[in-house]
Length: 363
Ligand code: SF4
Image 1 (cartoon, rainbow, N blue to C red):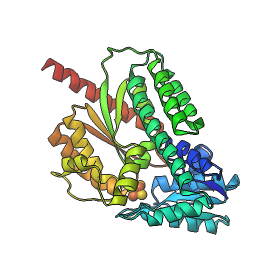
Image 2: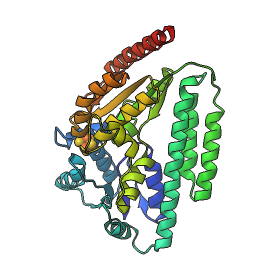
Image 3: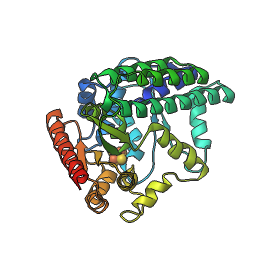
């Protein structure tokens, strides 16, 4: 069995580690490039979500490199994620690829379906072995998220452009190589030290912006045109509303024991939206309210073109922005999105935030 999986930000580090610890031969998809997007777009329905198209490109490139098994997450709810895996499987079969697809569905109140799928993947491995591997993968996800959050604080204050990104990439490299929970904890400490050693201007005044939106677009830098890095290098401290560890905790752990997460976010969204609309649409509304309450200077909303849950959120967000007094800009992105227009809009938004801040100071 030669296993592959789709990219989504740093997730590949944890998944590759997990599958390797489970004794499987792993063929990670090559890093996302323009070629990945071209392949994905060519072989996906025109109006499919952008993340589906990128996943398709990942799968084609990994299958071409010898993978014969795809591990993919499943989903539920009123959006297209629930049938991504089936659509992708049919397209790849039509293209003539010979492979197995193992779809890991969220547990929805009972774990047995998920554990059966894990057993199918792990063959002879014992449960204690599987649990150890899962434990290390979970530690890695949390460590990557902690390192990422720290990089977002350091980057806008760095004295030399690019230092934070270099330290961050080194820290991720260390985590990629950690094979035990103890090694992962040690790498987390080293990674944070690397970031803390980046020369910075401590007293620099920075804008603080929250990033909200569809999870894939928020987590995958290739899809969001390196939004966090661009903003950070423009001197903005970014706060990401979703991390992989939150998603795992809420969708895999809490939902498996019948609990729902994001209570504070949903409570904050209540005056504007009171029900699940699929994806992270509900959270986008609630997180905007929370960023306003936390005194952030602005919010950037990222969504894939045609994403229904985020289009619902997008239609509500101007009211939230006005009533809560927090400027907001939405970027609807897909394979056609160009960097020049994106940067221009971002710069104009930052100018507005700076003027607003200056006026507030002057009273
Ligand atoms: S959340 Fe949006 S992008 Fe993601 S699957 Fe649903 S419709 Fe597509």
